Length: 352
Image 1: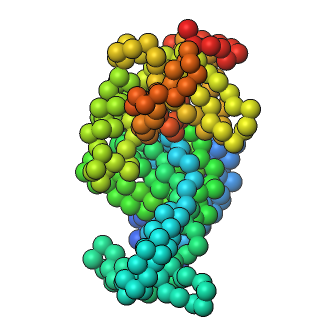
Image 2: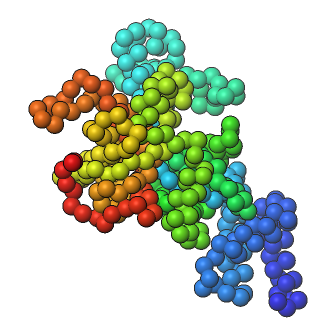
Image 3: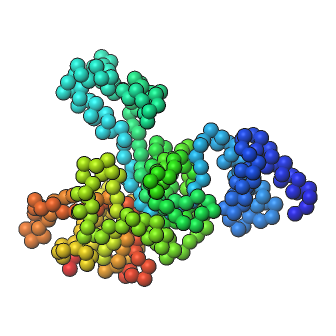
């Protein structure tokens, strides 16, 4: 690289440092990271040109964002849900049950025939709530991702949860790929508790063989692994605790049955068998239809899945009727065939 080119680069980096208020050393580190992230078709000065653009984008344009850079492997995607739905329903039910108390608590106010749900929290995490007394938003969409996380330069992954909020719930979320992204949050009790910011986007980084991806999942989430036969015990152990609503397991089983719904809005039914189960009935897994592309294996395949436990009713196959017996079921966030332990895709069949 010529002296002129070096000088021009230094000047560009210094300019970004001045605009963003970031130390020059941080800008240079970001530049090196951007260089490493570019596809191989960018070479020479073209590579430097676009690396500068990425650094300027991340440090200058988005100076208001406190999001920091991470790398991760998304291993589970929850369904989009409206966080405000339950809050609004509870406030309106309280109003209908005890109007005077509801109005006095500040959870609602009356505007003619309309009931307006209000934010009556004076403080949030010990800090004054700037929205205190204001109307609650009509909707607040969220989506939870289970993700193995590390900071650039680290080799080991740490388990984590990333909650996408608002418009960010619609960003592309590639499963089972190494991605780079920015998010807010920190490490808590040995796991990352992250949330999206306005700059959160997932960019696929260097391709990693699927076998290594599975290896990273096994290593990072080993404390979350629960045998299929122990999922009921796990579920019951969390009932009544604050952790209940964030429960999830990494578990394994052998595919015995797959049933695709005729209605695409319905989930795919998968029955799993495992040597840890006491009976041959298997465990029912519900896989959202939008994740049907993950079913790249056939019956008798050994699979790993990320799922939230739930309790449902049993089913008598002979009488074709529901029973009162409690049965553990799994709402899948993802499902992966174990390398070397899968069969080719076949037509869904009856459980043996």
